Image (cartoon, rainbow, N blue to C red; front, top):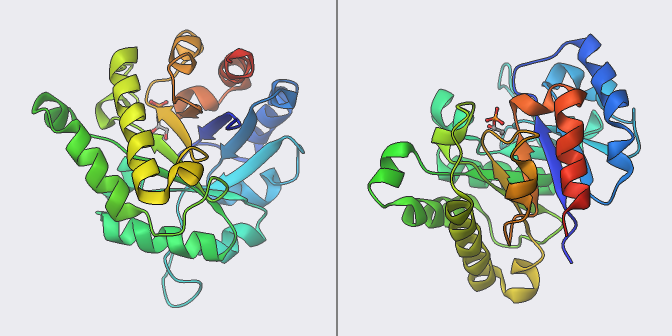
Length: 247
Ligand code: 13P
């Protein structure tokens, strides 16, 4: 059985005072689901180790371990700050920083080298969905962004349709199920059934307390990558609880 994962992506939000939210999530984090918070890099070291049940992750890393790359952060630095995970290939990085699948693949290899679990994001634009290209786009992103050698411990995939991020729009449960079943089949083909079935598949995009249980009931949804609703314990706690209660 794959363990469930409730992951929060704080994006470019939060200063020291936001860390009090972690304490308020602590009770929910004692449940069956794993809980991961990815705060901005400035909060990583102070967030790490605050709660034994809340893992901490970065939101990006450089493909190199060190060097002349002003403003960048490497995977070993994330690990040194106490991170155990890193989000890579988020659509905001792909858009804002023109990150390609090839670069995401290099970053993933660097993160694995540093012992980090990668939460690799992929998803289609609204135009691609309307053109019926969703599964082709996702297959290409998955296969080009993921190095060989993935395992259930080192890789988590987050399906985040770009048009659902921060918009309050959400795919139907049928649409989520179609993509997640497809991803599962692709992973099984690429890595073999034992590994393919061990890799967690998260849904991300406008997950809220009010829709979480319905999403978590979809087969092959092993949790969520939550943006806005992960910033406050009052919103994230019911999402964690819905995942704890899901089968
Ligand atoms: P929202 O939950 O705010 O839509 O963001 C989703 C996301 O991008 C998580 O990585």
